[in-house]
Image 1 (spheres, helix red, strand yellow):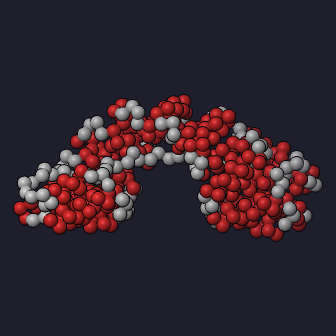
Image 2 (cartoon, rainbow, N blue to C red):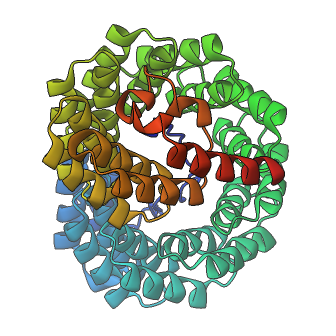
Image 3 (cartoon, rainbow, N blue to C red):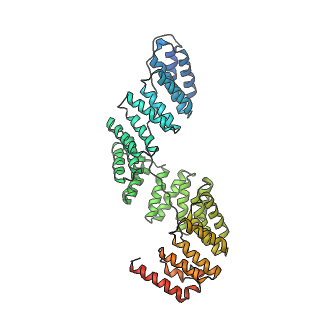
Length: 452
């Protein structure tokens, strides 16, 4: 007997995001046309990034001391913002750095510099510059929120919570900070506090779909499935294109055995986003449970097309091929899954089982021993090894030894041992001996006594 297993993926609770960069507008200074003030104001007013870069560059070149030190710093800051918006973070950092060099009291420039460093995952410099921004302006809620995100991404959830709390003290209506603090509590598995903070975000902004989505996941973790369903449904009502919410609601429906609803939600998710590999994988599992194997294979194959490194799709497609007795294809998929994830003990067991079915005895033994070595508590590996020793070697003693180990690990599907469509196929003959019956009856009686 092999252990059949299905893999379900649900979207995880995510952060609500950080506040954006700050562009600084200065009043025009007296002077002639085409001076610093003209170029600066023109750069601020235009919407085209290329024009902004050109005009802020001209403003920087035209700057003279009477134009003001802070205005010179602002020109660098604002040109940095343009580079930032274009994803050219190194150039943005160079301009922000020049801005704070010129004006060390520019909290906005330090804030923007920190945000660009965060984009490049330079968390140390991001923390340093958010700290400098807050030294200048201790009541800057965006800086607290965004520094909290850096701590969050660094796995320092308690410090993140402190900063999100400071953001809320500075601005009690800062719903992003509520959501982000909820996400930090979520990471700490304090799901009740997570729910409270997501609820705080929703109280301020009832149409914040992401908070409804995140609270739904927290409710799931608390076992409050009806509340979770209500929040997922509210999220997709607010945002009908929210594919992650459809996928996660489908996952919940599946766990609640509402398979038709799960299928509908997964289908909606891939309709919204035809490149959503996770939803194809999950829909494939529903088709597999319905024994609609061609549809399951199609969805697993689509998952693999979108994510060639998705080992779970190979595992599940291999399982479907096994059900369809297409053993060569099954072995190929299990082998690819092992190549992608060599620590996957269950797949060694699954491939070993297929090798048993195809009388590839020594390959079966190698895989089953590997599975047993990787997971000594897997009762099915011991059972399959017992079947190997009896079928391939007619070694009654070894077969009974491994059966005993399987029973000790908790195997209790006693009827399967006699069913020739299942394990009885490999145990035929052995399962009629006195030694087998005594062994099975002893553990069966003990299991019944323990209420198993």
